[in-house]
Structure formats: C-alpha cells, structure tokens
Image (cartoon, rainbow, N blue to C red):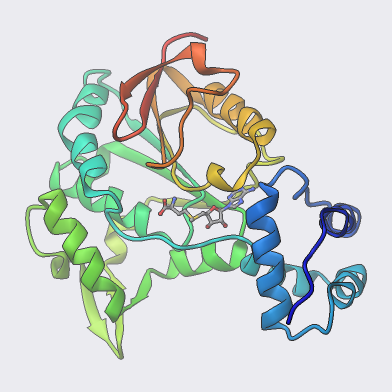
Length: 276
Ligand SMILES: C[S@@+](CC[C@H](N)C(=O)[O-])C[C@H]1O[C@@H](n2cnc3c(N)ncnc32)[C@H](O)[C@@H]1O
C-alpha cells in the first residue's frame, strides 16, 4: 500500500520545481495536486515520494515536461456542455457582432484543442470564421502539439458528435474530419488562422486584448489566491463590455475582481466586464 503524502512533502516538491524549473505550483489546489503526484509515483513506479523528489532534483527538463503533462489534467471534449455553446451562438457572438470589428477570442488552457475546433466550427456555421482571430494557449507544450495536430482517436468522436447534436449544429460532425487509421483528422482549414501559444497563467500575464475569453475547467485546479491573480489577468485582457466564460463548476462570485463583472448567464458561467 502506498504511503500517504504529507503537506510538507508537497511543499518540498513545489519548492524544488520552483528552484529547478522556475515553475510555481505553490498555488495549485493541493488536494488535486496531491492526487496527481500520487499518480506520477504509480506511473513511474517510484518506491517512495523521495525517489520522485530526487528525480526532480536532477533538473532534467525533458523529465519535467513529462511530469508537467502528468500533473495537469487534460480531459476535454468538443462542444463540452452543449448548452454553453448554444448560448455563445445565440447570444454572445451576436452581441459581439454589434461592435462591428474583428472578434478576438482567447482559449486559455485549451488542452488538446477540442474547444478550439468547436469554436471554429461554430464560427464557420455562422459564416464568421474569417471575421475572428483566435489565440489558443496552454502551459503544457506536449498537449499543445496535439492540439496543433488536430488528430483525435475516432472513438472520442462519438461523445463529440453527441455534444454537437445537443448543441444543435447545422450538419453532422463528420463534415469536419476524415477518418484515417483509427483517427479523426480534423479539417486544417478550421484552424489555419489560430495562433497556438505556450502560455503559463501563473506567470504569463496579459499579452493582448480580447472580446471573448474562455478559460473553462482550468482554474478549478488553482487555489483562491491564484484564481484571483488569473482573473486579474483576464480582466486586463478584456475590452470593456466583453465576455469571460469559465467552467460549469467554477464561479467568479467569490473573487476579488467580481465587482468589475456582471453575470450574463449564471447557468453557463458567462460574465461581462463592466468596469475598467
Ligand atoms: C481540463 S483541461 C481544460 C480544457 C478545456 N478548456 C475544456 O474545458 O475542455 C485543463 C487545461 O489547463 C491547462 N493548465 C493547467 N495549468 C495551467 C497554467 N498554469 N497555465 C495554462 N494552462 C494551464 C492544462 O495543461 C490543461 O490542458
């Protein structure tokens, strides 16, 4: 049976990672961080947590990249929470069109890209893909490479198709990919203007202004302090009267910056910046 990891050991790990790799996990939610560390120990068959600590102390950047991919949770789907995507189509995007300018969208924590393809499909079906500029970022370079590739196990397309139907897409999802050797190869035209960007929400700060920011199912892994910091980055990165969407189990209500946003749709967790 595996030994229970103590908080002091987690602190030791975050300190070493900070020192060796200049990466700050100190404000991740420790309960899920602990579960992921436990998982890494199992996957790599380390005899103890000290063996993992020694491995991190080697300052091997290739190992750290693999470690980072195991620590971060990459689970995602196309049109995840279909009613959210319907709300984008029926309300949020039409509102942004009233601004009569290019629509700038940031997917922060885009994982393997399903969210980005969903947005590109939504915009295509609204005849707006050419009017939008999308930046898709993640801290994990390996998952970002997968997003860029746009090749997904064909078995995943079943849930994606179901979501797309519930979203009430105009066609069949098959229109946007071809099947090859057990993979769904997404139509590259959809993302030809997407800027894929390595960006760490902990330290990366704001780098442009957007009309719509999606950061869904990412901040759930951060503690309140880090959520506040990241939300300040999003506030700074949004044009006034523009939108931020978070995951269905997340909320802006408790954060320091809440008074600068209003709730647009509480079910779908969509907020609008109303104060600079
Ligand atoms: C569960 S996925 C969410 C994917 C997608 N947004 C969705 O809702 O389906 C969480 C993603 O957040 C990324 N992530 C974790 N920490 C991050 C950080 N500090 N900066 C940027 N992205 C981060 C992970 O690499 C992972 O790809």
